[in-house]
Image 1 (cartoon, helix red, strand yellow):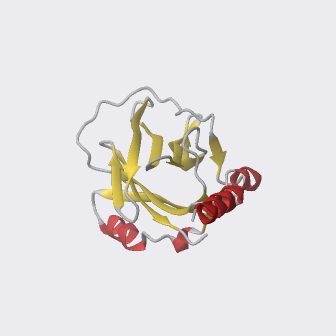
Image 2 (cartoon, rainbow, N blue to C red):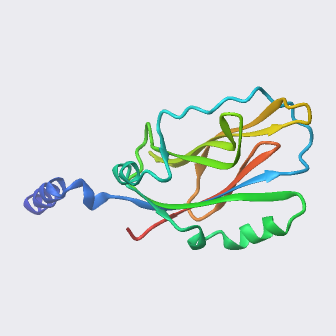
Image 3 (cartoon, helix red, strand yellow):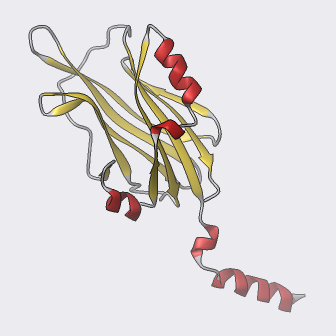
Length: 188
């Protein structure tokens, strides 16, 4: 019996780590709350972009084991439609991707830019990324910037790191900006 157990342990240890790879699908909708209660805005500033990968950077996405999916393949189509039909909410972006082996620390983040530039930043500008340690986490750090009638700019920040339960729809929000997200295990 000890010989068999030793053989199984040796075999398991000799398998490449890729045999234990985890692959996840992430579907995200970014939306604006048009009639949110008054939140005191802040001076516009970009979130931390050190780990941000541009959605158009094929080489960077490949190095991060991320494959973008077309917006039409989003698993959140019904949620997009509900937000589109709402008078209060305005969906502005759908992002879906497959990610193999998300790291626990310093996970890559996707750079999300939506809308016309407001000065030197987009109306919605920031990052979103998946990390996997003992639990899955979705990290969103975005700013929604508006210009008032007098030309001054005000930004509203959504900064949240959320523990994600697989296959469940999660809602991350600030008073003006929100994210709906679902993470599912992918077949690879």
